[in-house]
Image 1 (cartoon, rainbow, N blue to C red):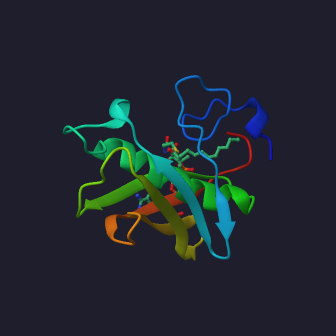
Image 2: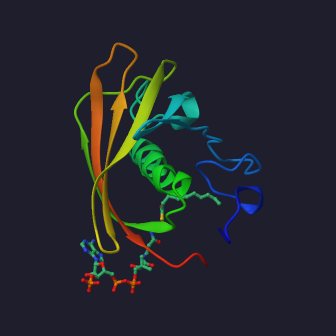
Length: 134
Ligand SMILES: CCCCCCCCCCCC(=O)SCCNC(=O)CCNC(=O)[C@H](O)C(C)(C)COP(=O)(O)OP(=O)(O)OC[C@H]1O[C@@H](n2cnc3c(N)ncnc32)[C@H](O)[C@@H]1OP(=O)(O)O
């Protein structure tokens, strides 16, 4: 890969981005998972995670599913369904996995799971594979 984590300022995963989310990932079989606990800076409505940030988290775990497999790809489309509010101050899981691949087009699915297992948010995203020189 020409893009290395150590040089990255990725808002989602870089350890050196001072305003980034500094996410860590667990690759569990065909699932990429991260855990996050929102704080006041991450809220939209009081006490509730901002939907745009949930979208960022979902985009990131899906992108990391690909990165782990040395597939360099960029998000070209993402659809998110927010079904339940995600409270700040409580840890939740964000998961992504591949749904299909056809040529350069890779479709991934993601979900946000509350600590009791409730699926609060679901996403489907399309990624296009690019050359290893972003
Ligand atoms: C180290 C740190 C770790 C880093 C770890 C990773 C961190 C990731 C961060 C999160 C991920 C992001 O946010 S990524 C950032 C946000 N995304 C972007 O900025 C992407 C912007 N878009 C682009 O630059 C471009 O669209 C490209 C390069 C992705 C693709 O352009 P292209 O190479 O010209 O390809 P193009 O011909 O348009 O499309 C290729 C084929 O896909 C089809 N196609 C294109 N879009 C779609 C679509 N929405 N739905 C269906 N099909 C589509 C086309 O019809 C075509 O089919 P056919 O004619 O071949 O049949």
